[in-house]
Length: 182
Image 1: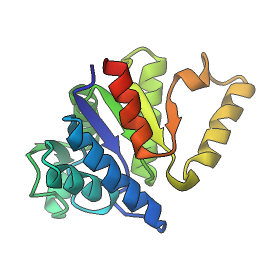
Image 2: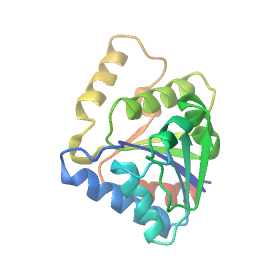
Image 3: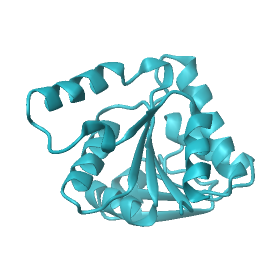
């Protein structure tokens, strides 16, 4: 049963307005379905948009932020709970421990790092949490093609499409969760 959902996404908003719309819509849906949002604790970019949307719609948001980002004053101060941790590694591990599943939205290096670490941990059976990729406006199309190449070239164990679920609209994710917890 999914009670808490980690979101990994950009601390910037990107150039496509659809990314912002999808982050806000996802936040609204998370709140409506009474799922707690676990995220990186920032106030900027897609992560800030998603957290704001959850809060505006009566949901619960738990942020996990490393001390260095507190020093840069990027933390969100209007969320339910903010946990300050030592560094980025502890942040990721803590977020994984607090969530039942994860959703990856568009983002940069940090988002890709989080996606690949989750995929690696699943492959190594360190955890078995569901991973969803919200492919807003086709953002991850090229990455998904590359991951398929890793399979055809013999570098992955198991079926790639069992590692994650690619969805194109926020409502598809919530529908899946609702169906998976029934």
